Length: 512
Ligand SMILES: Nc1nc2c(c(=O)[nH]1)N[C@H]1C(S)=C(S)[C@@H](COP(=O)(O)O)O[C@H]1N2
Ligand SMILES: [Mo]
Image (cartoon, rainbow, N blue to C red; front, top):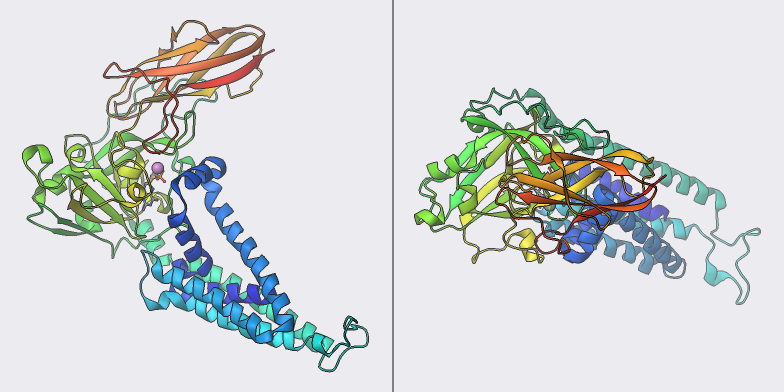
């Protein structure tokens, strides 16, 4: 266990010098995420939420600890074989680090290799200080009290303690340096001054926010905005060296832009509600922010791109992030006049690192997995036939328009409100179509129209409320919404895979 700990500590230290992403636990975790079947991944997101990454890494550590114990026991009999086993684990980490899509070359193997060599040597050395079992008479356990030749308890304890302390030190220093490795990115973010957008968003209408405790805030603060991505280490990109390439099918003038180039463009400010395709009915993976960004459609048009309806050859826009994520959006929708953004501001601030600093995509009406690439660095025009991006390779639909959904925020499931007037309230969304009607049903009663809060834009969610004369007993409250095209949210319950959950949200409460 100690040798394993030393290996990880040293690996972390070397990773701080190379790249935090090259750490073996991070690399193996990333490889595991990429290879996890969509159903399992969806299950993990559902059950662990944003803690899914912590659970994964803890799992890896538990597995490593068990293997370390097994190798230790093996080493008691076969010192060399045990040490070789540690090296084998190092090889697994090295291969994982090298095969990551964001790998930057052979140096990425160093943390795993150096860590494993140190771990193997330490195991070999420590076991050598233990009483040799083969020296004990058959049938008799080696006696600890009397000692065996070569068994130097003091030397063992000193070496073990020193190794433990050094490993802990390596781990702490590695962690600290690793965190500091994003310093230039942090500094570049601190320096960003968001210009005043040429086309500001209208103020959020008064009355867009219902005044009922428990209903989500109309604008989701950055700190509580949901986060869904595959990054075990959040990419820290330095805005001063960041570039965005635009190239591919139908591009007559390829672009290579800096962050300053983007800031100098016409900037627009828009309220847009983001939704994750992994959001279950009633789930939390939806948030509304005020974004500032450059018009993506204009940028594409300048590089010569035409939408398919105007004869352009590219149907799919593939966005790539610095960590190798690929997200494919339909060129037609991106260029159909909606406010597709290369966003660089979120609720008045430069994008937080968690949400894609320096630049991400935002397209109203499309789930995040087909539109909202964070840490964006490359835009390639291609076709849907020619390329399947990350999530599509894993069984999700090529197209992901957001389904009309509504959610009861209050009362909460299993709440025990008092009899009398109980305010039911929540949100409904059908981005780019808008919400026209929300209805609430108590038990098997008739659908009753809820009171709609003011609409901000059709690209944002809309709040609603419904006063209910609650009578004692158990009740089921159900909600459904109708979008701006007149279509009512389907009752049909589907799972999130492949193109988003559908069905009515209901909440069971007991009125006292
Ligand atoms: N680079 C990168 N961008 C990404 C993802 C990712 O895993 N990596 N996940 C996408 C998904 S599935 C969603 S729903 C949104 C979530 O954006 P948020 O984390 O800012 O809320 O980001 C999208 N952009
Ligand atoms: Mo998502």
